[in-house]
Image (cartoon, rainbow, N blue to C red):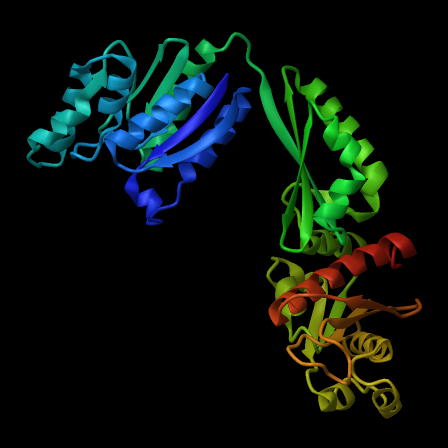
Length: 417
């Protein structure tokens, strides 16, 4: 079954509300193995609605429509779809009774136009509305299944789960499921990742492989269709193994994890503490760490040493380093990391120094960054970077690279202890 989801409402096109219904329905349909190939949004206009329904009938055998079932003149969904499929509208007595009772319970007078909400397409399966007035509808015509749902999510979601799903399952010859696994990568661009995996992408069938860039990172969504859960897991494991054999050095975690979550987990698991000295990033690293509940168990503290004076007076960077190499240097980054670790008694010290822009500093180009990592009992390392972007992007990416450098430091150097 190949589905199309159509959201109706001019307020969606005007940006007054967000179309969360499409996301919800896509996930629900994937769970029963229904392919969703198209999302559409159309305003409260009969001609445009007829056009989009006609188009959907040609390319989909399931059309799910949300919105436009209300009492006002611009609620045109069921009238228009009834016209498109050659059926009439009839009053559903139970729906009308429920609407009348709704107003009685609230001691309000029901206006005549509310009767319109009890009109349904003849011959349809009624989908009761347990949280509103307008019922939903489901039916099949000329090989195409239709499901009409109200627009408000608080009405639509329970209606679909409690009543709509059972109708759709009854239409399926066999019930398959669709699930996904997301692989997260850092320090590799989307184009490079795709190039490395081109043979796998070109020959994909089931599972499918979909790279996606996001905020300086890249994810790969693996999607598998299966009838048996064990079979689906095996297929995902097989393709994941082939991917990691090619680009595994850039992989850091699954699904909705993040560099921050992974680093904090590593620190907690090892009983390791960390402190930060921040020049370039101005406290951004410390801010990110402390967003996570329970970070106090691993984060000793941070010092924003934005000026050269603070680097020397608070973190005791030697004069000779500042004079010979400058603040934007690997030598300064290592000294900052060492000294913030000593000052706080942390296991690890991390430092950020560099040029965020918009102008050069110490004759160093914008985007020049040094990240220092000092581990008690180990050799201190400074990671040099050349980053692009705006001032804010360079600062944000420096923090991510700091987290990534910590992960790589762990994996290359073994456990800190």
